[in-house]
Length: 623
Ligand code: BES
Ligand code: ZN
Image 1 (tube, rainbow, N blue to C red):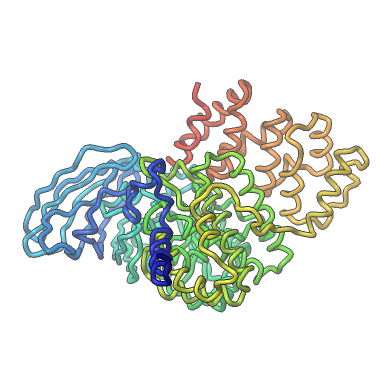
Image 2: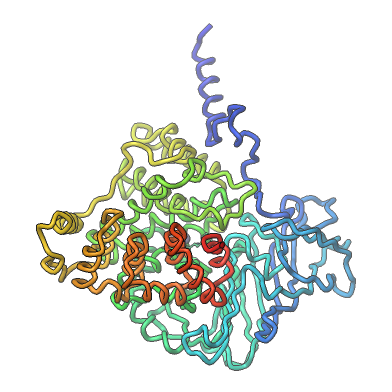
């Protein structure tokens, strides 16, 4: 019999079952997945949760080793728990104590990229445990640079990169984004160097080789970061400044002088900045990412110092993480899109506020094209926002999907409910989950109790599930467009058809983004004459904009344009940012002569590459 009550029960059941869970047919491998479980950590935060770490570490540049102690304070969630499980990777554990008492421990066998579980028998009184340890010179999360690999050429340099699961290679800890800790650190370095961390930094601190830090807000382990080098500071605004080697300091401060405006703009839209200061640290060119949102101190590649602020969306991005990512964090790496998608959405919004809609439109089209490329190239599973990463190294799954697809999803919600309404939602979301780590499913449940209730005519669960759990870009998704690109399309077409010589194209006022759009949308195959003509008219081989050079060099590889090859070699041996070099190695690996070229460049570059860049590219140069 059908009655209202049955219908209601049915409706509730469907809503519950469909509540953000992946479809649960037997054929679906996700059916057995435990939502919210971190498959990339051996730790046991469900029974014992570390909540504070005190570090006392010495940085030894001669041995390429960090050694000292990490004291972990914790809370027993299960009062009967006797063991603390932490993650390590290639660490040497010397002893573990609680006060004067030595504690028993087992360092379990290594399990590939996950490293080794360290199992510690806890003291009866729940006192903090101190682990005395040292890192391996090959620690996956640390790069040691010789003086020759720095801008100044006189002093060595060290930096860490913990995201996603490399903190365990330099600190024994519960290396899961759902465990948040406050920390203090004493870092001992050679006297002439300065240490900085993702914590309170004092630019006035005397350069005496002993530096003290405090991070009073609870952060996930992947945001713990350290750098040591000949670092100097220049203020850019009331709350913003830049640390860099002296040779780069002025150029960096000029390039990123809008950081303070970005900070203010973001606060106006999304609520107060929670982290006190926001400084940038400019790394040597081997830094494997564009940027890393280490709290209070984003780590930034020098490859975006273009001289014209054309690549500063990177700063907007890392700054935006102070809201989306650092205050609300993904609970597992499956939920990375909650970090990167929201941040990419915010990046676009910040860029629009600070630099105008024209620039926003251009950047959005380029981002959309990156996404289209990944949708064409990646396996279906890897196109899913809430990706199944079980058994996989998160480093191997880096793509535009969590970024651009995540941002596009949010853009669609914005367009459906209105910008101001969506901003109000985001501001509240950042507040409601501040200093928490959440899963995709928690986000969906939150959407259900907020926007889906408020805007039942504009939004529906089916569409949202489609965005989050299915491959590809849903039909009728927002499609960015830019008027500024129309003239570029016309110019390219007229040149390709022979109507116009390259020199006749009026490029005088083209933005870097127009150039990128011009190059990225060329046909795959061009003749030597065409490449020579472009290069002659626009000096592309000589371009100092690293993004333009990247696009051009990729075309040069695919079409084997020899005049650009010396520049390509130089590019590959001086830049270690994986996003810029990997596509070039990949393109080179497709032909025998390309591969030989790549092998030579890689062999020369490898000593200066970060372990992540080595790992990501060595497959392309295998004999
Ligand atoms: N947090 C990421 C970098 C990251 C992601 C490291 C996943 C390890 C695992 C950072 O905020 C980022 O997204 N960097 C991008 C910036 C770009 C999208 C503006 C990069 O490095 O290219
Ligand atoms: Zn990011």
